[in-house]
Image 1 (cartoon, rainbow, N blue to C red):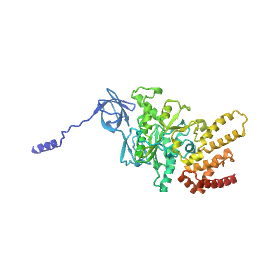
Image 2: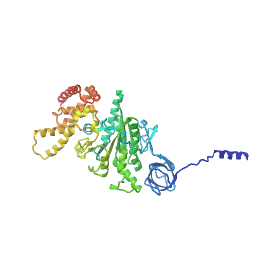
Image 3: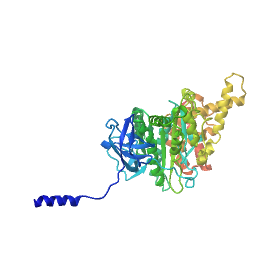
Image 4: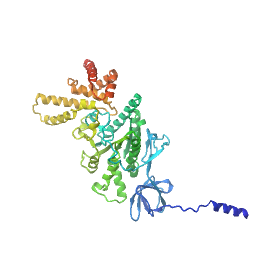
Length: 510
């Protein structure tokens, strides 16, 4: 008997009289990935909510008598009457260098089969964008490797440059080429041993894309050796709308870690049209009032609070954003395009007509603009490409008049011929970004009329031949151009000798 009493006394001693405060509620209804909850009186907006079976949700609608919660995960296991509880935490994602070279979902969980990610830190998915006083002006270049963009619509570190165009015009290609170019620059810069070199790490956010397209992108980056400097956040078309809505914000948090730790990062949102559609789905299910094109009224705020997180910070690093928007039949006046155009620092507009004519990348020089990039352009590009945009604009105008078949004077014919050569020169195959020193050399040759005697149909071949000649025979000169970032008398003399040598050999081959 005494043993039983002893055991009871031991059990009583172990009991804690400490009261635990816990905010719990029940599921009222669950459907279409959204749960309506009862009894959660003390819940925050965007707070994580714990469901039975380990599933989590985010509280998005805080109403008087119920809470609208988006479930991240399988809703099939949830039913009416299930108990739910608040966590007191906002949704966070793992951040840091450990994510480089990995493919993760909207919650930062690995989906590439390479095992767990050993991340030491995590950042909240939603963060307030940096204020005005901590920002610095954009005056450092970010090279895309695409000659038409780097010479005429330059992008700076900390800029937000929109890439906009119809489906199938090469928007994703430009983004992938830019990421590949950062990988190539990183390798060259880190190998040089330059203490002042700042690598650019990339985050590619795939929203609502086909899984096959994401796999193709991963393969392209891996083949080019750029995946080791890249984080891929994937929320494919098969994912629920909640994951597609969260993915860009998760990507922004991953990019912010690099920025706040004194590094430079580039983030691609591919694409925000599908992101807005996912947000519309969630909003309609949550019974939020809809506005224009059935989008909720806060869709502008959705994209502005996302894109404003890209910046160049004083004493820290930078985050450059390349959001992608898909238009319908070239209509840039639709709701989502106009919203995003007004938030960004310029746009690169891709035209279907140019693409169909074989002009790729199909960049419309007249409609594309970079509002801050020119201040971030290196001197050598300004020296060789300062007049190009004006010359191309003149060419487009003259070409329109020339279609009427009227007799043209010699000056007009010469302008048309030069314009046609510039157009051909800017043609560039995908997954083949050019180093800035190679671009400058080719544009210098154009400026000095080396291509004038070559037929228009042979310009692309001639440009590739010049590139090969310079990289194999004049590598020291190219290194000097890259380091100096401007044309000196010595460099110009070297370029003249090198291009003269190429011209003689190219003419002999023909």
